[in-house]
Length: 271
Image (cartoon, rainbow, N blue to C red):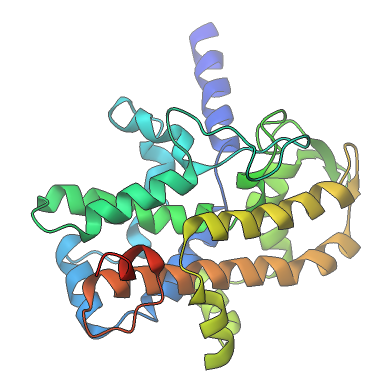
């Protein structure tokens, strides 16, 4: 019985570390799929052996908790405490979300890499572009990215990370990930260009960090979240899903399609 309870506690702890719920990741990736060039689609399809990117949108959340990929646990976030700035926060020796995207982009874009190396890098990048747009993944180290920042969600005990993972998106819209894409992926060319113009993960992370600071400011410990909170933050959820999807598409197009006018500085600097 003790072993069963211990296993259950460990599993719940792992689940609490997840970024966007599964639907959030699926939405980000499906938006990206709808903005890939034909050349990029062929390359991605080849690397993933015919499976869609959405198929792997949540794969790393489980994989990071297995011995084989345990090294990637800290790659899902960058914690910044309240007394730190984005610039002053220490960089973990094990890596963080910013360094992970940079390194895996390098693997994916380098000639001479084996297919299995590039396939793993792609599966990771697919996931990380969702992670880096979730405000609590740029949250405080002291509360484990909001996991120990306790609040009430419609009268029920919860925490800030869990609220931003799934509760808030699910309360905002009861949509499938395809419906999310259909409803929010409607930006003008001008707005799309603004979103993907700055193609560096450090800038994306800092942008998300600024949102996270505001979330902490308006959601103190014990805060009772209700309808007004959902109304206030739903546009940000929509914005972050769209940013993640468009930037993921831009990154992959920049890698795989030489005729694509790349906006991602990680790639253009290497060309």
